[in-house]
Length: 326
Image (cartoon, rainbow, N blue to C red; front, side, top):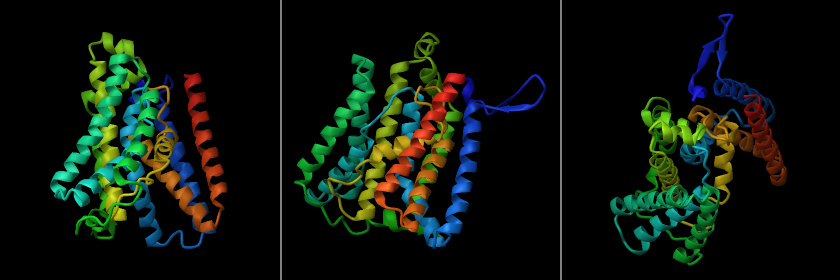
């Protein structure tokens, strides 16, 4: 749990940054360098439209990544978030369009579906000790199939009038999804760094048995982090439906990889016990900016995947080296 501290003083009196703070500082420097490179080399990168577009593109992945940060700090993983976002999108559209439910009923029901998914993973983990990797992988497959079963393989559209305002509304020049993302990160940061629950998450991820012996309800903590992750995936699915004004069973494909990439690049340790939502936000912003700049430069799609993969590998390698050194 010492990794949650921002800094400490060495014997010489000099300030020593904690590993996570040092990682965030280095990531920020890397992002500034990336930003400057694209500013010089990519046409239209610095336009106000593109800058707000980067934030808009970051929003949904970054929102899910907050919940994933909690999960990974707790030394778990959830591979179902992308499929869950798509499934919740299809369920919302099915209830609102085909069943005629009003949105004030359909949206809470969609969030409840997300929460139930998180509860299922937590139940299998804490009751039967089945690794979350296995359960969430099985759930990923099941939810993807569920999308096609519910929709019949075709888009469900259009959504009720006014629903697109969730994505299209602006306050000044900033779109509502960006503001929702900021609110989620503020709440996520406070919850992780300034609450008893947040300290329990770090404790469980750092040493589960020691946390249990110290009186922490490990099952409750793990259930809470999985439900949080699933609820945020459901929220992202709702936002995606608003953006597209429809629900398609193939949407959000590969989102789980983008989310995990943002978390790992942000400095959260796959071994648990260390991480920060600040780093996760920078990780999500870094990956979105990288993809945006490569598109503006005309980099081939396959090359984009290769470059993104190298970035993720370097981040994982850096985390592994730091873990071995500790």
